[in-house]
Image 1: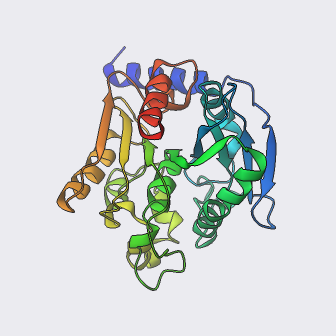
Image 2: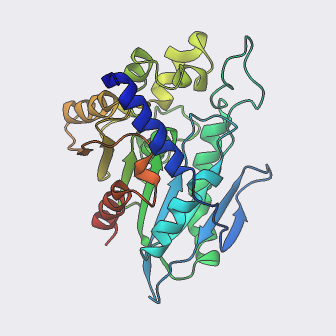
Length: 292
C-alpha cells in the first residue's frame, strides 16, 4: 500500500475509534441564552474531592452544524474520570443544509458563533457554581479540539481584540491556561492548506469579508495574550496539519510570547479526544500541568 493510502487508512481508523464510544449524558445542563444551542453540559468529577479544577471544553467539527457537542462527550467524561469538573460548551454553528453546488455545510455563523462562545464563557462561572459546587474556578483551564481549539485560543485573547470589537474584555480571562488540540490556530496558513474545505474562509463570511474580519477572529493575529498556552498536535494529522500549529507558535514567538507545542509521533487528528488512545492521556496531563 502506498504511503498516502496507508496514512489515509490510519486516519480513518483513528476517526472510527474516536466516534465509536457511546455518548455520555451530562450530570447537569444549563442555558446561557435562549437559542437551543446556547447550553453548557456539566460533568461532575468522578472523585471524592472537595475542590477540583474546572475544564471548559469547546468541540470541533469545522464550525459546521452536523458536528455538535455529542461527539466529544466521551472525552468530557474521560476528564471527569481523571478528577476534573468539566463544562462542555455548545454554540451555534453553520447552516444545516449543504452549500450551493452540493458542497459541505457552511462553516460557522458570523457573528453568532463568536457571540455564543463569548457569552458562554462569561456565564460559565455563575453556572458552574450552581451545577458543580466542587469546581475551583480559580483553576479553570480552557481546551478545545480542531475548530474548538481555534475558539479556545480566541476566547483567551478577547482582551487583545481590536478596540471596536463587541467581544473585547477589559482584561485577561481568569484562566490558568489554554490547551488547544490540533487547533485551526492560524487562518492564513489554514487557507493556504485548504483546511476542512476553506472552513475558516466560510466562518468569516467568504472572501468578501475575510480580510476585514480576520483581525477580529484569527488567533495568530491576537498575540501576545499573557495566558499560558499549550498546543497539542499529532505529527500525522491530515485534517489540521502540523504546519498550522507551528505557524501559530511562530507568531507567538515573534510577539514575544512562548507557547508550548507538544508534537506526538504517529498520531493523527482524532486520538487527542479518544479515551481509548494514548494521546488522550497526554492531553489530560497537559491540562493537569496547568490546572493543578
